[in-house]
Image (cartoon, rainbow, N blue to C red; front, side):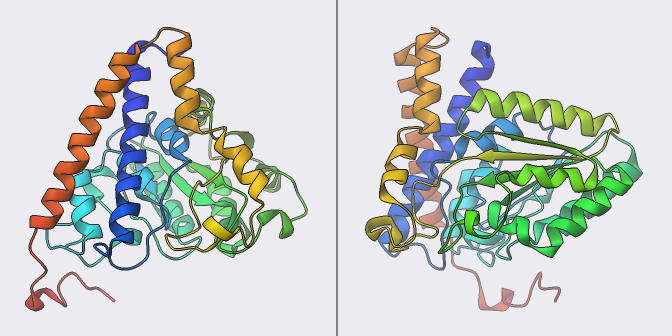
Amino acid sequence: MLDKKLALSLYKKMILIRKFEEKTSELYASGKIPGFVHVYIGEEAIATGVCANLNADDYITSTHRGHGHIIAKGGDIKYMMAELFAKKEGYCKGKGGSMHICDLNLGILGSNGIVGAGFPIAAGAGYACKMEGKGNVCVCFFGDGASNRGTFHESLNFASTMKLPIVYVCENNFYGISGSQRELMNITNISERAKSYDIQGITANGNNIEEVYEISKEAIKKARDGEGPSLLEFKTWRHRGHYEGDPDLQQFIYRDKSEHNEWLKKDPIGAFKNIILKNKILAENELQEIEKNVDQAILEAVAFAEKSPMPDKDDLLKDIYA
C-alpha cells in the first residue's frame, strides 16, 4: 500500500496529465493548435508510475504520444503548451510541436514522430550511462506497434549484450493507427520477446498505478545496480482515437465498441481514486483541492501560450542541424 505522500504525488501527476490532455484536445478541435496531436488520455498510470522512480538526471525517450511522459518526468506545462501553439517561448521555440518536445536539462531526450525511433537513442543514452558510471538509467517508452520495428530488436540485442542500464517500457494499448497488434504477431505478450535476449520480461496491468510503480521500481533498481535491461509491458487503453480527429472515436472503424466500453470502466484515475478513498489515504476534499489547483495551472499554461510571441522569421534556420 502506498503512503499518503506518494499517493498524493501520483494522483496529482495523473490528474495533471489528464487535464492537460483534455484541454489540448479541446484547443485542437477549436483550431488553436496546429499539426497533429496524439493525446495520452487513459494511459496516465504508466508514465506516472514509471517516472516516479526516476531521478532528475535519469533519461527518458518518448513517442508521438509523449505529453504524459514529459509531464511525468517533470516537464513544465507552460512551455509545453506554448510549443503546442507553435510559439517562441515553447520548449523547442515553436519548431517541434506536439511530437517533438524535449528538455535535455530534465533528461527528456525528446518525443518522436517516427515509430520506433526512440530505441537507438535509448541505446546511446544507456551506453553513456554505463561509461560514466554514475548510476543513471534510461527508460525507453514505446507502443505495441513499435515492437515490430527493426530498431526494437537491434536496441534490445545491443543493450542485453552490453548489460546497459535501460528499462524498455511498452505501452500496449492493442491498436495502432488502423489495426490491432494482435493481428501482427503470434505471441500474446510482447514481453515474451525478452527471452530472445536473455533479459527480464514482465507483463502487467498498465491501468493499476500501484502495480506499475512497484514493477518499474524493481526494474529501475536492477538497471542501476548493473544487472542490465528489462522489458516491461503494461497493457492499457487509449480513450481517444489514434490521433485527434480519428473517425474511429465515433464510428468504431477498426476498434470494437464493446471492448472500448469495457476498458473505459477500467479508467486508471477512477480506479486509483477508489483505492485512495477506500483505504482512507486521502479524503474527498483533498482530492478536490488537487483537481482545483491543477485546473488553475492549466488555465495559466494556456494564457502563457496565448501571450507568447510567434517565432521570428530570422529564427527559421536557427538550431537546425540536418
